[in-house]
Amino acid sequence: MRARTVGEPWHLSSQSEKPPEDPYSIAVDGRELNPDRQVLGNSQVRENVAKLYENIVKEVGNSDFTFQVTGGDRYVDPAGNIRSSTTGETVADASRTSPHLISRGARAADLRIRGVSDAIVDRAIRGTSFLPANTVRGYPDLHTHVALPNRPEFYIRPRRRRRRTPPGRRGR
Image 1 (cartoon, helix red, strand yellow):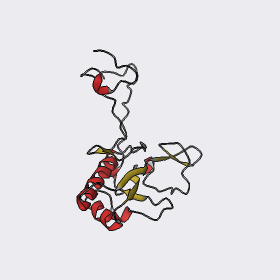
Image 2: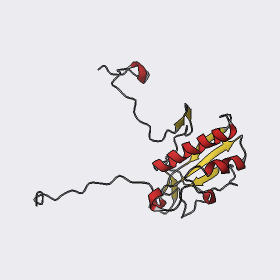
Image 3: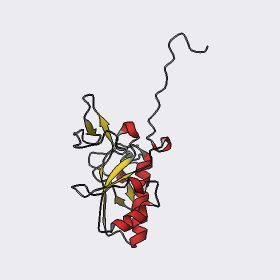
Image 4: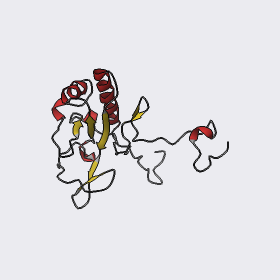
């Protein structure tokens, strides 16, 4: 197996070599829905964003509209500020109970959807796990906020850390 040279596309290097996985990519039919790689650590959010896009395409019969993830996960820093997991910047006017927060399940995404009516988006949302009641519009940048229900089965599933067995306790 030969190493890939700098700038060489993955498909030109060894067949057994795979490109690194991009955990924040949401690609549907060759269209990247998360081009800015907003952090969306909850796989259920990513899956439902893709499903929402697919539902809108079915509703309108084409993909000639804007659909882009513009906001994702957030966290509370030690000083109590709410920050974007993508940029680390403080998120102004963020709610302490936001479903964007990792501590609240990282269950939300902000989307820029242009070129289709709110009624079409609302119908498309019904075919996902996003709650229509959690859909919020009217933000200054005109994004649409979507969120999964506030139930444990929709919370991010953090990796479990293996417990270390103290020396001398193994095999008992």
